[in-house]
Image (cartoon, rainbow, N blue to C red):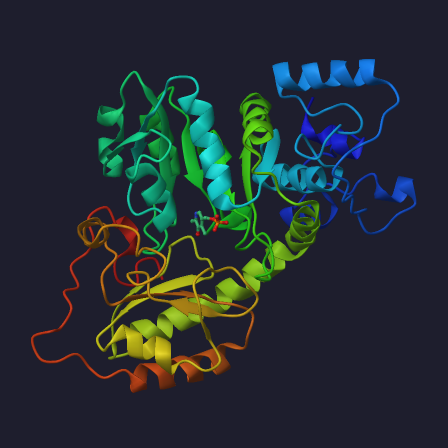
Length: 411
Ligand SMILES: *Cc1c(COP(=O)(O)O)cnc(C)c1O
């Protein structure tokens, strides 16, 4: 059963993403006499008919299909979260979506689906988000990973390869990959593309051949820095396996988080458009600034800017006043952090450097503030950073596999 049935209606013919963002997952509301979506916080669902409940539990356990009617227990399904899943699937152009307690819970479920089929080998391209890298490298779920450049994907695939995993634009270097070429190199092996940075507003990986589209919903989908969540957009066949794993391992999204994420989606296109315009402007100014060695800004656009400073990056972090010095991204306010100290700290130094995550790299998530106010803050923070001592000048060689993210590529 496809996710669209949640809303009780067939989805309309192709509409703009801006329109879908405010209507998907809500089509049945007017018929229910409601405007805002109902928030169902139930952990359990009463029924006087335990024979029917038994049949519904059996059906879910064997198929992973969303339960028909009340979910029995909140670990199986939730109607509020299902609205968010319906909406996100629509925006990503996939048949289904399955939501989790965090981006990492979502990635864990994808790996467990493949591991349980005996396919524990993963082919991956660095850089990935630091904890995704760690989950694969540390073998916490029993995975073995082969790290490759995009050109090496096809040769790295083995009979026990369960997934190929990429991020584009990648966290934190904003390196971009040609998703269609990568998907082609994967052959029959599912490609998992982390679309957290681009969001479906800028890129729909399923249209380029990715079978699994992962989001840390904590970031742009929620958009206000107040909800932790993850979601996988995929076909219904993979979604059923994910629901079975979610039921058994318990990484469910809280319904209040589902409510907030659905609300976040409604402003996603306008937030992305506004923040991207400001980010592009700041990327231009940084690229022209003598205190900055190199700027990474994706050809695709987006609200993330990474830049390497000549001075001490820790002093830049200490010097911001309007911009918030914090990890995470995708909120309405601008955040800045030092990947080598925080988001990618958990990745070994050698692997970090080899994938272009240098010690002078700063990653900024541009929000909805005025560009001039942001620039004034950055300008002051850059000035407060003492220049590096002689001989300490950072090397600015392009990172291996960093592709188009060199210099002001694409701007
Ligand atoms: C933050 C992030 C994750 C992890 O998501 P959480 O919601 O923090 O668990 C995964 N991928 C990318 C690209 C991220 O930025």
